[in-house]
Image (cartoon, rainbow, N blue to C red; front, side):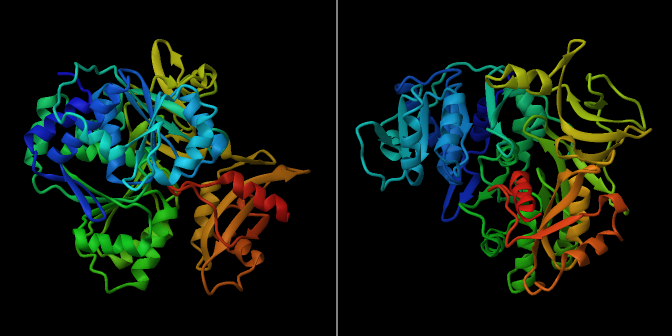
Length: 525
């Protein structure tokens, strides 16, 4: 049976139609309710000419309609395109235009920005506005009226494992790129084969049987924006496993704790310290909130420091913390383990190797780029040059090679060093920012920090840090922090410049904004 995401979802929905699968604020959907509404939207898309292979931009914050849009597109073999709701006109022009979207589904809050961008995007021929209060317009359709006018039946054509799923990623060092996956590859690599705790399920029948048996499935609170790749991984994995996801319109740490209490959430998905640290602080400030149901915190996509993990464990005894390694270009690669000395490792994975600059494997003890083979994406949409460097085919085997560096150990374990594109070269010594950030964040005065390299006449680059202090610690000095780092990392890794900022800038999903950090330290240096 074809491992197509839409077909898998429909099969699970048929098996457990009344099970609640999605909650957002006061709304919730069972599998059957989500299925019917997605069918209606899928028929609307077909009625305006959207068909197999067409791209549909989805431009909104977290809400149930976002999920319905993704499923509706997949049902008609179209491709949902995730749009960052914080983008301004030039960035929207890029995503709408680069993806060659033929339709746009946009939240009314962002309609004005969308209209400005659409003037430069002639491929977009149809716009659906998500908000019952949105003003009527001749060139747009209202979301609820569009659904009401269409059939709830599932009468779509056959699908394929080769159907495409695209995730637009990046944007901190240039415009985002669309990572193109086959459904089957996406299922195994990004959705863990519908089984995050064991071997992948290889057939539709296995998926359905496991979902039916999962009647007491854990309830996860999904904090990151759904336009973030890791959030979509978690959402779709849950749907295929018969689990429920709770999503929030906007992240507020205290409100997230109240949701955990009200919904008896057993796990929460975050993106590193950008989300986990405010949660830990809120736990300390609001001990009256009942978090007894919470058993696990999972993170991916950003630094999750040991200090924040310790804070969480102090507030929730017995809490299991999983720090995942992966990316939009590779999927879910495994769980990161931290040694007492701060070294990060990922256990042996037969699909992961280290390669040199020519994409040839390197042996134990040699530093190289981390590469994944097997179920990997096909390309970056419309960008053959970047595709060739990120998804090379070597000896007939396609790999995904990002900027992450590592060292292979004798047992196949990979020691993670950091992102090569952010690596600081100071007098020939390589310094990975995350290691220095980790050291800074263990200081009691530091709330958040980003580390970058700035020009140095003698050594080429020197280490600089943009730091946000905790409330009540304004007396901390740059000298105090640099001396503290001397006890945590080698001397050549110590920040030579420390700049205090009111807030360390991060993306809506919590990822580091290194260009902002570089501008900040250069302006103050």
